[in-house]
Image (cartoon, rainbow, N blue to C red; front, side, top):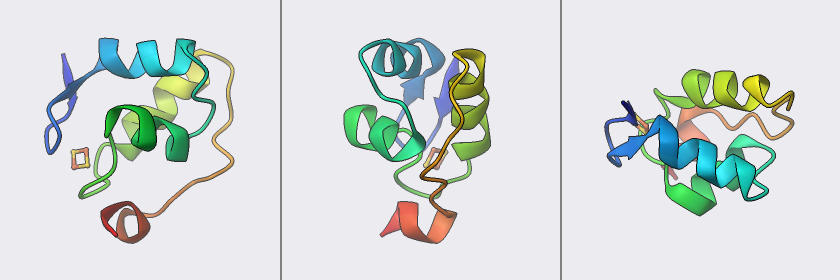
Length: 67
Ligand code: FES
């Protein structure tokens, strides 16, 4: 299922990034692009991080994600 429509990133790809060591949204953005455009999917990215017991420390805003 696509989580990030701007960058066409699926939940599976985000989970792979997290399982490979991405521990916050900034790292997820760098590794797979999800959240790096409009930022509208960042709440869903954070939900996936939480599923792995990770609390997002970076918490970029939509503005910083788009920069
Ligand atoms: S939907 Fe993911 S950055 Fe826009």
